[in-house]
Image (cartoon, rainbow, N blue to C red):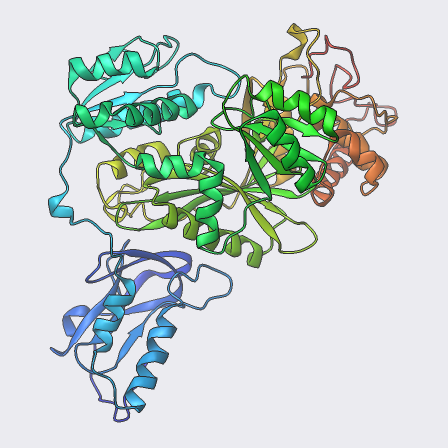
Length: 625
């Protein structure tokens, strides 16, 4: 980018890169601010910084191979970059460089160029609230709140995240104290935390531990909703302030922004982002009035609750009153949301440090439409039905939201996307490690919990190393050339009077993950893992019934999509999204082809392969759940 009317000629030495910097995921660090940005590149040579004249300086440096990615003149309006800020098939985090360029040109023509372009770039890329790394004080002892006993809605994912956090802190020579009464966990094993307290995760007991141990810091985001609620209560009681305990990572104020629906909506309006139409209610009467204003059907759910506890859809006043009364048993605030059933549900896992370096680690899509709890849904990563524009639109929104909320560490943001347009709503933001975080970590190889713990100590993200290569930076966005599918597992046969209808409240007790080169391969593997009696999709056509068991939808859908892939009446019983049916149809065709090729008897036609030994239409004792 050259704005000078009399260009100078300089001779620079070029370095030939061994592999070249190509692709949509090249991290570049700005000299001066130290911030790292994701760029799109396609070049095989780089300028040798040692050959720059005295009046030129380095502008950007590649965070992986330390080669030059941009230069700037110290006084004249001249600068250049090696990457493509405007690239339409990748991130546009630095598209603002064009604004700096145009403003410089305008001021130069009008004779008002009092500020050098180097300083303009510095002002544009500086994060005003960035702390001084030299002044960040590392804690001596850190208290980690676990998730307590296993329950539907939170299980082994918080044992995983807590173990990773302890590992990260021990590497920094920080003493760790863990509170978790769950003995069936890795994090409570000998050799991990320095001290383990088998006590309830309540304000009363945690206060006693703080009084005895006197930690310098506390981690709240590694124990799920239980730890978050306890941390918020400790803050309100003044316990953390009394004993000088600093909350590491995401501050409590940011946590409350994401948990309180009214505050969350207000914060989103400040950045012109939209949340699904909803209202908060403190009584059944207020909930009924809110539903009348929003219009039925509505989704009723308890605030500050885990796993969609006490939630459900109401189609009329009577159903709403029943659901609201039930929800108030679990919380003092109930949320009434306008129903967006049938919309796509998309999730992004985002990582951000205290210096505003921010990346999206994983993008996931629910096969089930909005209205089915994420824990009940079949999830695929990366998303299979988003085009490039939709992907980057939601990615940019995720980064903007996380920055505005001031979250430090890892968080999850969920969207509702209209399949017929680009309209979207932000459903919620989880300012903590979650079930989706564990899936994203395993799917990408990016240790989210480990990185989040390091970021909570004030370590800049670009300084952390990629756990796979141990040489490149952790400030990158993984690119997957494979497909990951998560399938939930239910065990409702033990509870005869429990409804097998799946919905906004989580009932699954676990999940499995499969990896394949295609969706079909990963889906088949996942179905075999979730039940030992299942060998995958059934390619044969069977009659459809409205009274199918909804918690067997991954098997039923194979029959339905073979019969009629786009018939809304057929899709309704199992709530499979219309735009994801082609994925399932391909799986059925794959099975039909496989059966005809490999499942033949020596002297006869293809055998009838039933796929699952238990029919998905079986009674409550079926093992295919």
